[in-house]
Image (cartoon, rainbow, N blue to C red; front, side, top):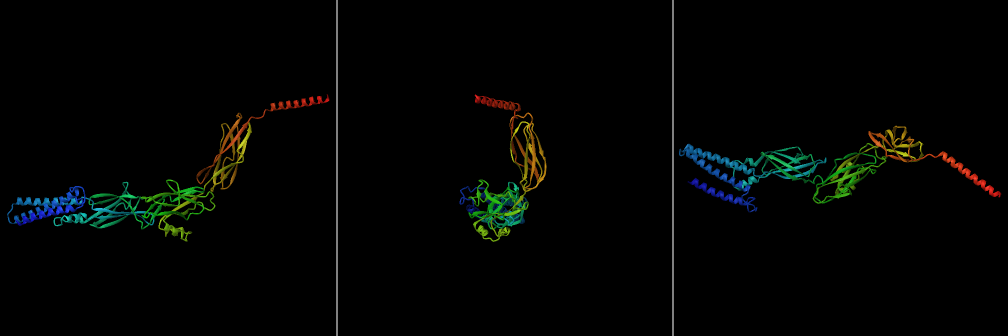
Length: 501
């Protein structure tokens, strides 16, 4: 009788505890406008209900066990009590596991992006094992006397991966945490195979997988700004341009103005920083509100005459993006003849670039006269000079012409075997119009094609104009001359006769 009374008192006390604890739990009417009959509270009530039922069944089973020893209960009735007790244990364990799987116990507390000294991006992910499940159980008065809570105190074999657009972008692909105790934190560093601003953290543990999308924080302790270029090395012909794409990323939260600068580039090579969207020339930048990354273009201009630039020899230089403090440090440096030494002490955006000047083959044609007047039946002869105005030797130079229909031509020589830079070579050309050519204007296009360093080189076309006139009428001219002579003679004779009279 006393045991039964204790059980009733304990049950009443438990109900009071449940009602009191649920009132102060997150999600209760005290903290939320939502109904208290939500999933979290329901599972808590189910767990406490299962605990109460299990304790009652356990008490009943223990009483039946004592009665069985004294022969006061049949085996069938004892078996029913024992079976009910085992079912209560299963129901309690099921409710406890259901409650523990109610929400994620592992929390991604922080995901920070940082850049190593080699310019490679990393992500440092911090995982926390939240103990709020155990705290909630303690608040409800649930203890380990019925079922051990070891599986809640420590999680084993946790696997972390980083995804972007359904692809793993972390090195290693998957990191393993052997175990994590309640309220314990673990930080894992991944090298990012793709430079991104946001990613998905995949956490697999205890047969379940959580995917958390995060925006990467920026670690400004290693650097305040980074600069990268996917086109860091380029070949460019003398007189040409090289464009480098620059990706800038800000890690500091200070709203600073950053200055753009070039270090180590010969003065003969011009340069300019351009906005990729507007094409505006820039000397300094400021990140717009809410943006942490920008894209710029660096254009370099090589001189057309490479007298002070070594052909085929790489030119290394640095593009810089610095705040005012680092820029002043750069200006006060005395090692400008050693740019590699200067950048070691600079904390800012630095990217090493390279230009490889390449020689070019360039052929031009010159002619003293590109206009002629001829008579029908005449032959056109002219001299054209081929000049190598590039920096490489020209080979197999072949003059080519485009003449009117039925015209014939002859070029001597038809092929120039080679022509060194700055050298000239004269080519004689002869054009023969057809015998029945009409009077009028005709055009002949002249150009040259050559090979240089495995590439085809063409000259600009020269346009020669030829005006064809009809030949003079010899018979008509003779008769006209005879007529004029006769007319003059008649005038003279007539004048003499008049004078004598």
